[in-house]
Length: 634
Ligand SMILES: C[C@H](N[C@H](C(=O)O)[C@@H]1CCCN1C(=O)[C@@H](N)CC(=O)O)C(=O)N1CCC[C@H]1C(=O)O
Ligand SMILES: [Zn+2]
Image (cartoon, rainbow, N blue to C red):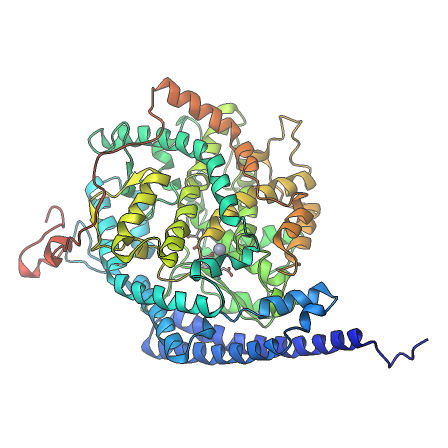
């Protein structure tokens, strides 16, 4: 036998590879902690000082990434011969350098553009419609509250228009430079453009086709819901504003981007004499606080035998909007790469919608916790869509009337077909309405990165997609003077978006698998339909979910999906099964009202000219100059 100190050559190579990767892993995590901390400081307190510190830290981190990448490259030709797939996969991921491949001055410009666009978005304020002297309204909580609660057509139009005037329009030129530098970085990484580089984590060369197929399967259900909601909005606002066969004006849907129509549930509820399922009033009357909302979410994870939040989480998270300073209020979850410090930053309001967002963000942290001991190269979702799905899966259980009764937010559950339709409609107003939006954001961006959409067509290409997929239109005509994509966080924030579309499909596949494990769903038992399942306190379900989350990105996502659900493919039939009773009801209801399914228009939604509007005509200019325009009744 060979003495144990004499290894074969391949065993020696494997031993060296392990030591090499471990050393990079330790150093990489330390560098990541420093960079993340300065990013947190900027995002939670936007000042010149924090911006500078963040810019410096980003350059320093890029230097480390470049050094690590050059050391990995020295293993080219060797790492591919390793027998252990776990090691090979780490080398594969670490062979992609990212934007750090840019020359330093380009990278500095790129980073500053992203920070500048984010700052414009996060600090934008507009003048109040009713009181044009007050010009300090912010997106959170002011504008989201108006979009949620106002039923004043003109006030909604003012807010919708002015938000875009003070955000998207102001970063259009930044974005031009950003796209060029992003594509330069992509090419340095061997990709044709940044859109292709963004799809790399999905490890599939049929990914775009698979997405198109999913949308085809889901579009019919969306069209039925769209027709039904259009009728309800026509009843509310009149045929002049909401026509029988036309697209829906985008500012009437309860949300600044028309991505979630949950806040117009009161206008659309099918059976008004049945209990409303928006438990916001109960949350307020029971004295819910943001802290209580986070603890409620944590309790759900713990009831599934998943991991509790560490002390640092409660110590350092920001869960209520701090007063007296600018910050990025858009909710986010943070992993500080040290298996200790995990945070959420959220300007939480006491509403049901925010309770769902709390679960969404906590889902990210739970994933961070489940894979915290993996090598850094594997500390990601199996694909980015999986990361977006974790919290939403739990929220599917929390949203059920049965669960809301359990936690005292409903005092009775009516178990009858009409109550069922009311519930399914409330779910569809956030889950089905989101699908075309979740798909089109990166359809637009992929075409921008690939050059298929030219700079002069950016805004009208956006409205083509918004019209074609969502069946909505801008309340006022748009032009290439505007840049409406820039009014949505993820564009200035440079966060890919297709992950959310993937999540909204796979979260129902996860839900179904977990409900079977929890004994809460049985396809053959009509008393246990998928939409009534609540997995809370099921350790079988929790352990199965945990087993998948612990893989991080160490396995290709079809394998991770198979471990949990038994299938290797994204499958739209599960979300359609969940909403089946509603789909049948909508088809009948639309038929009964002779509703036109789909939309058409001969309006020009967006002109390709640059129609420059003078500031006066656009802004609710302060009354100090005596002329109040666009501000409604003085
Ligand atoms: C409210 C939520 N904020 C994002 C999220 O939580 O995904 C934030 C901002 C961008 C990335 N991000 C993170 O927190 C990441 N660090 C998570 C990770 O680690 O991958 C969000 O943007 N959502 C939720 C529903 C649809 C979409 C929207 O609101 O349009
Ligand atoms: Zn998310």
